[in-house]
Length: 116
Image (cartoon, rainbow, N blue to C red; front, side, top):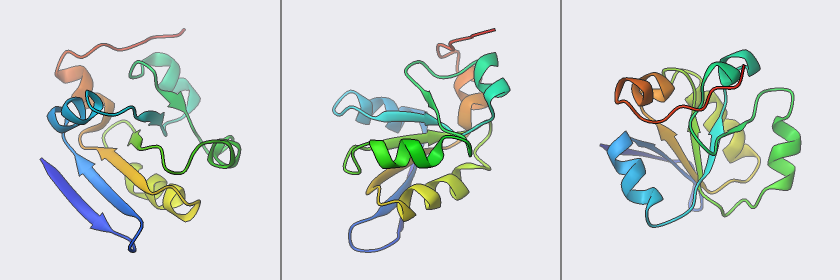
């Protein structure tokens, strides 16, 4: 599944399924961004994910390449929309939101990194 929301001529937010993510990730490198809270991140996150919460959002947004594709996820996808708009406002051009979030990732038996 793949849905798009065009913000302007340079920016689009894509809502993608797990299957589409794996297909795209095999072809290009994503910055995987977890937008949950620190305690949720430590309980389990997608491999290679970077925690970007309200405390470090500006620092992250100011230091990463705006042309690099971002995969944003949260627990079930409710926070994705708000986070995607914030990244777009900061100039990121290729924004992908994972439908179903980390909960679907776990349900599908995908690898989770835990840090207690």
